[in-house]
Image (cartoon, helix red, strand yellow):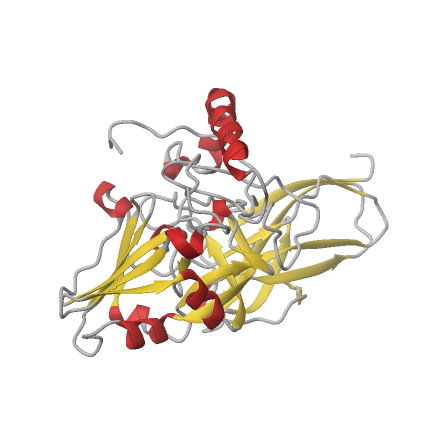
Length: 362
């Protein structure tokens, strides 16, 4: 891609599955839709993911209550080319695709699609966040993935793991990223072939994608075609050549679900999500019209590394008026989410999400 040209922005149906018949014609219609929708959608998308310029595929709308698992159709999509879909499908993957593994000995090994799916016996929840996600943004989602531990693939299919210093991943769309060997061999590093009970949808990485702990989505390529071991400890990715950060841990973030008006004198339930990568979440707090007084929230899902946590707060009998509500998370190590406001570039947004709420007739 020409780095001087900003890729187009457009909303795309995110959950298109390779199991759908007539996928080729659907892809053609999508590409036409991308071209028509780009100019109309650009302004809104730039506001939501300005750090990726116009590089967005689908940004979910605000919701009144976030589900613990986001549907494939509702899961965000960010890509250098939002219209990209692989030509390989579920019907052709067995004969037309394999994952190449290059070891330090120079030999190339291949793993076929059927082999990978047969070995993907484990199912895990995993949360992905775009590095361009603004404070309170929707470019974050949690899904249940069918996976193979990445270290099993590296140990069984590549030579030189013991002396490798980094691992490079390359996608069919030309995207690439490399990470330290320690990251790739982590217990929370996976190769995913399924999402929420079905093969990976085309938009989300079919035939296979990588999930790496504590990193933003830009370091975790989809549509994999090749994994290579290297003795070079330096790591990089497509976006790092334009000044974006590399293997930085995700920032602690929290968000309110959509809430505009609430009735006076009646208990209203506030809700949202909190996420802190592999550090996990220990608690969430809200503040009503004062950043000096914080009230504890109930955690509505079990805190765990690399998975977002849902929270709830019962706001009892608010009086009429307009209020400013704030939310903050505390990670598993006890570190409080920072108030310092920072844009997404170069290493992820920080700051506290706030919303203005009208109670009663105000």
